Length: 236
Length: 401
Image 1: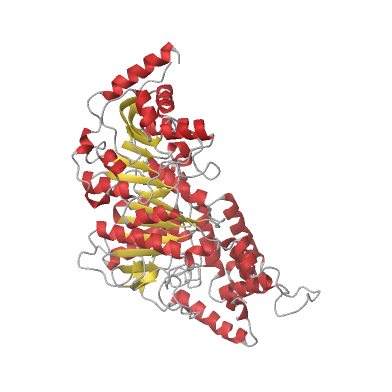
Image 2: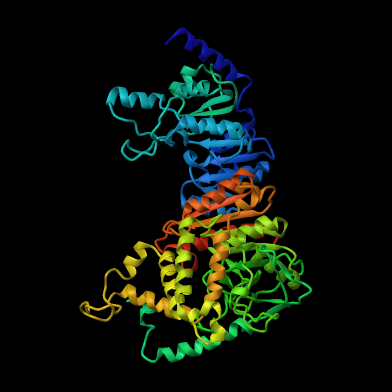
């Protein structure tokens, strides 16, 4: 690793580790069987915000945000079953995907744009991320960390593409065509000028790793990365 | 074999001729309620014409609640009519949208007051080219002013005013009906709480205009059309209108549906006859479609309504930017398309969705998997019903119904 890159990492780490990032999520009740990663997102979305959830599935996160935070939520979902489930919940969700349906949203259309566990399955993650930063004032993005020690172990010791809790499908049937590590993602944020406001890793059970650690630690022990981003200046 | 193929039987023609008499009477004196507007309250049309007096034939189901908040307007397609949940007065077939509308159905007539009117320019009781021109005492024919989708919507709004319906809980329709839904949401945004445009587009494509033009030319090439004066001449351009319908009907289906229903199977024969008889089932089916259509529809009305669809271009009406048609809209939308619809392909629906996204309107969009082509919106499509039910029920909750 070059000296310049190390400097960037340190700077980002300082940024991200400023005041315990997931405090807001901590005090929330876990009733209703809400997923832990959803509770984490809940802690990042201000009340009454306009929210776009891309890859919103059956709309459970949007419904949670609507019911607990009073947000004006919209969604994009690829599967018809998911869209139908969202319609039944009264959620305005369009059948579509991140690669094709983001270009038509105007700048600053949403307070918060959420992309959960999806960026690694898009055809062009960089363009998708640029759109997210353009249409949302804040971006919450999570993805499976390809730098997790179990992934590394699978590759290093078995010489096989990993199959894990967060990446449960074999290489020949997975939709994940653009895997990245937490460090890779930090690099992309830097490239497109995303300011990292908060960042953390979740363990294999989706629980936030609350103690502040250097990137290499998260990159090794985090099963997922979760980032709160805001538009900044791209690296010149 | 498909049951629709067995309809052409010896002796059937007599029945059809009776039907024809009934169709002619439906234009003037329909078997449904009629709202009459005097010459003092004319319909101001896009062409500049002021149509008056005129009348609108309509049907209703359900009851308007005390708050007047549960009204649903159904907009019918090109050759549809007001009999959405009532037996057709000419063909005696069940209402054309009984799959979707009725007690306990997604558009629940136990909960909502449902209205559907025959569009202006049609021939089932609303004023159109088959109606008598009060200025001359003879049928309008081609003297009837050109009709637009917006004219249809303005007329519907006048009807709703008379019925005491100030605003709509839901405006829903497919194909040309979907165009009216979009026009409603654009023209009267404050009067539409929820909108469901189905299998439609923000404008009529060049290909669709082309198909319509073939149909119109078929009608006008029929000598019995008599330059549009066939009602006075005592003739009917049945051949031309039948061919127009045959061509159009193909566009309502899909290749997989045609293959599944007919393939290359022969019609009641073991071998080709080496003639131009209807050897193939698909030929027989199309001839039947053409024949049965001419008994229930007026040729001039077909010219006018196809033209109205051709002229529809919502973006063009708003400075070339479709999003401007919906700017500031608070209406909640559910846009729906069908995978095998090549007349109004999913891309058309996506254009609507993208325009609504651009103005931050609440919009849901579903593409229903179906091999039935454009006509899928009229057929038994459980995926369409479940999506419609989800959207409508949620909208009803939001409106406190």
